[in-house]
Image (tube, rainbow, N blue to C red; front, side):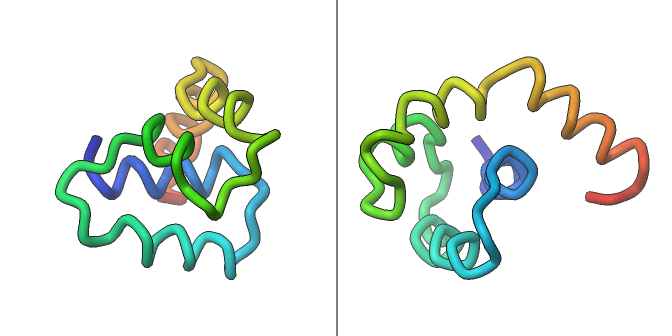
Length: 76
């Protein structure tokens, strides 16, 4: 997954604040193709109890719809 897509999913698909989003960006920015699922499952920035639900949601059709709507509205 491209870094841009990864970060868009984190931005739109989570309730993480700007500080957490920045930490995530710092953690993945040098990875050529970050695997969203793998990163969520192994990152110390994500609480253990959030991992499974977060992976499922970040790959959900609901989030894909939200991202598409965001792009259509010129907000990406």
